[in-house]
Image 1 (cartoon, rainbow, N blue to C red):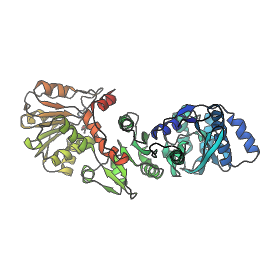
Image 2 (image 1 turned 180 degrees about the vertical axis):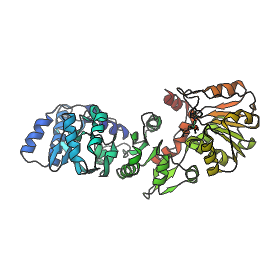
Image 3 (image 1 turned 60 degrees about the vertical axis):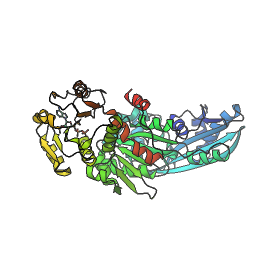
Image 4 (image 1 turned 180 degrees about the horizontal axis):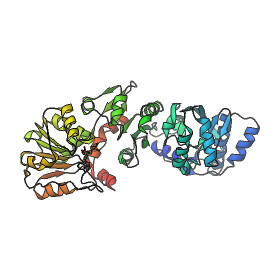
Length: 471
Ligand code: ATR
C-alpha cells in the first residue's frame, strides 16, 4: 500500500512515524486563504470549510499519484462563530489570546482519504479547548517568549508546548495535533492485509525547565528499536499549573509520565496510589495510568541505581559493611532508601548543609549516621560503598575534593554524575584499586519500569543506548 500524507506539517508527519506507518510526504500548494474566504461568503459551516480544505489538498496530490492512498487534512480554530487564522503580528496575537482567555473555543480537524482522484473516506473531529484566564502581563510575557514559534499557528499557540494555557480540554491528543490517527488507522486496517496498525500510546517527561532532559532520546530509541506504536515527548509545566495540566494530559490520552525537578513531590501527591518505594522516598518520578483509570506513582531512581550496580558489578555485596553517601538532595534520598532495602547495615550521610542531612536521616532510618562535611575522609577505612550524590565534579561545577588514600581497596565507588562519564572521584578510586561504577547506567535503568508500563515492552539497556544518550 503506497500511502501519501498531503501535508508539510512536521507534527502530522511525527504522528504517522509514531504509528509506524511508512508514508511519503508531499506538500500540496492550494490557495487556502481564498478558498476559505469564498466558503465563508457562502456561509459554509466550520466543519465543511475544514473538510473542503482537506479535500483540496488530497485531490491535488491524488490526481498526480493515482493508485496511492492520499491523506489530506486541515484544522481550523473557531471561536464565537469566527475562524481564527494565524496572527499577523504580535499585536494581533495579543488580541487573539485576550479574546480566547477564560473561554472555550473549538478545534475542527478534518481528515480525508483519496484514491485515483476520488474520495474514499472522511472524518471530522471536534475538540473543545478551554483556555484559563490569562492576564495581560502574562500574555505579553508569552508573546515575548513564543512569538517566533507560534506566528504560523492558528490561534497563536502550540498545545504541546504550552498546555498550561488551558484549564480543560474535551478531545483527543492527535485530533488536537491536527491528524485523527485513530479513525485513520481503523480505515487503513480494513484496507491492508498485513499486521494491523496499532493506535500510538503516549508518554512524556514533565519538568521545569525540561529542554536538558535525555529521556525523549532514550524512550524514542526504545520505541523505534522495538517498532512500538507510540510517542514520547518533553513538556515544560510551571509548578503552579502541574495538577491541572497533568489531569488534562491524561484526559487527552497520555498513558503516563516521567516527572523531574521540580515536580517530584507534587507528582506523588497527585496520584491515587503509590508504590512503597515512592512513599518511602517521598517523591515520584513515574506516573502510570492503570486500566481502571487510576493514576499510580512510582519512584524508579533507587531501582535504577541498584540495577546499575548489579549490572556493572556482580561482586558487590551490600551487607559487607557501611556505605558513605555524599549529598542530601532528592537523588540522595532515593539512594538511601535503595541501599537500606538492599541490606546495607549502616550509612554515613555527609552533606555540606548538615541540617539537610539530619532531616533526611530522621525521615528515613536510624541506621543513618550524619557526619560533618569535613569528616568525610575519616570514615573511609570503615566503608564498603561510596556514593557521590552531590553535583560536585559535574562539568561546570566545582570538583569534589576527597582524598581516597585511606579507602578500603575492596570498596565500590559510584558517582551519579555522568557528565563527565568518568569523574575525578572515579579516576582516583580506580587508581586505588577499587571497583567503580559510573552514573549513566542509573539514568538508563530508571527509565525501564515506566517504559514497560506505558508501552507494554521491557526495553534493553545496552551500549548502543548509552552511546546515544552520551552524544
Ligand atoms: P538532587 O535532587 O539532584 O540531589 P539537589 O537537591 O540540588 O539535587 O542536591 C544537590 C546536592 O549537592 C546537595 O546535597 C548539595 O548540598 P547542600 O544541601 O548543602 O546544598 C550538594 N552540593 C551542591 N553544591 C555543593 C558544593 N559546592 N559543595 C558541597 N555540596 C554541594
